[in-house]
Length: 225
Image 1 (tube, helix red, strand yellow):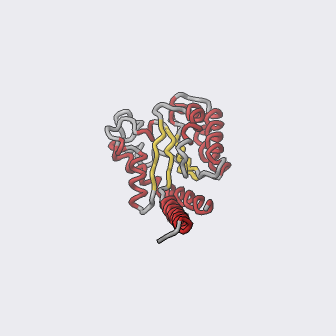
Image 2 (cartoon, rainbow, N blue to C red):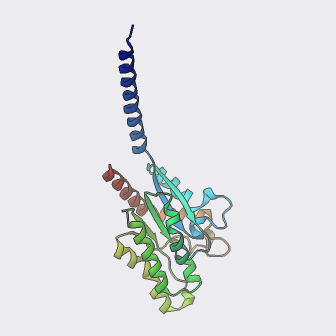
């Protein structure tokens, strides 16, 4: 028969054993947690005009990356019609999602509204630097200005994204709509937003650099252990 002292010792031993087991389980679960990628953008990332969000950029990118064997979740944080100024003002709120990596996709609405490229450049630089403050890797998905705004505007605008990427060390996909914008069957009737097939092409074009983004996020997570 166990004495009260022995019963207490056994209870403490069991408690310690359970604590170690739970700790090991939690560590294992954390190690296997998916890489969280924040798709921070405007209507092109929000899936404007698409009937099903499963057809939108975040969902299709997640599916494509999982198809490559990556354990990821792509979190949508996009607002249709948003400019870089609006994005800058809500960035901290979006970062509350605690992403492991961020794709920054803005600029189209700035160009459509003929916003001074100087303003767009300042906003993009501030957004990227803020995300990088804690070492979170960034992929900039660039935009091109419509040709009807003139050569001067076009030249000043189109260099923004590559310059910000170079200055910050962020990854760069030069043009978000690459592969779709010039193919009418891949675009919606407004000729601005891709249809589901167009989104698939866009994801395919971006996939190689998106894989690099995941690799950076994985390396950062490993280094933090």
